[in-house]
Image (cartoon, rainbow, N blue to C red; front, side, top):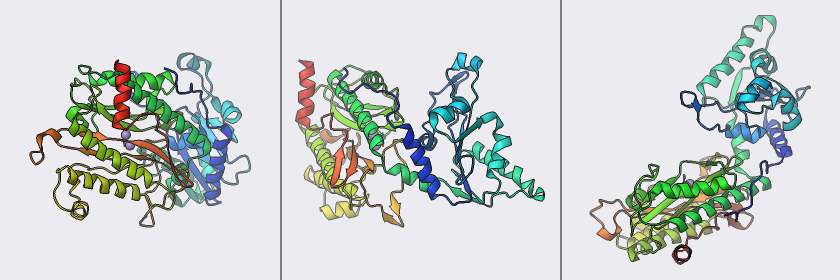
Length: 449
Ligand code: GLY
Ligand code: MN
Ligand code: MN
């Protein structure tokens, strides 16, 4: 099953991390310092941790995967602007827990200008903050780290009578950094394309393995097999496999029910590759054949998906794809008799909301719900080349809704693709898994024969 290219680590070149740090430094005030912390390790149970996941902001600026590290960016510092604090090398510890880069490796292999042992940070960092009037950091994201920053600053405050100059201003780092993260580079897009291709292959595998009587988690296993087989060791978020009415539960992750003959199954799953997320949803018949009502409702969602994708282009604003999806879904609900009234009434009074209650997408990148403002100065953000977003309209008919005919009840359908804005429109990254009903049936029939 190796149709997607085999993954190798580090698609994003080392130099790019340095360029990102430089770009951020250029946006900072001259007499300032930025402090970015690695993610903490988190206990799952007693002696066992959750798989470690680096903080996305920290990783974006360093490519450094170890916990217990802090990056300081110091514009104009004579001995180097990019300083990393990290664990020291320790043969005894490395024998148990694996390789550590150490401060030497941070300079040699991660192109830091300077590096120190994390154990010395309380002695060294206040001296680096001294004389800097402004501190950029992610205020309020981690109470423990907030307290440490204040401790470093208070160390300086306690020395004002000896002439120390503590900073007077704290500024959220996110504004500049998250705007940078919103525009993906060519190297990032390459990784995201691969994450999307692996994820598409995984969804194809789930389609071909589907059969009545399986448990939902057995399809989850098929997806995760393909992720891992290609070196994407973790899903980017908890995999959703919802058979029948479970597809109407937006964040269904129980995944234990038996898949029933005649039901649809909704799968929302994406792998994480080199930190980057893919995010695909497909909905297909457990037994490989759509019933007439399933196909009718599915085709409305598909038309909404296609209309929204057609609205992804530079100069359109963020909300245009959502508006396009709402219009198609609303018209479809009217045509199928699930709603009554005029298209205008349905849209203006949001009468579609009992059946479509979420947005049509979100930014996608190092985080599945990626960073970046959706509005600028109170207005929807205009789409620009390099932005990556999802398009994910859906319709969910509550299983006990007496106001609709019985054959609609409990149908939950979402079709989600990942797209990158290009100069003249957009490119769909997730075309490797079919979404047309005939193509889905053909893929499933082929494998079942
Ligand atoms: N899988 C999360 C989402 O679709 O937003
Ligand atoms: Mn999703
Ligand atoms: Mn999504």
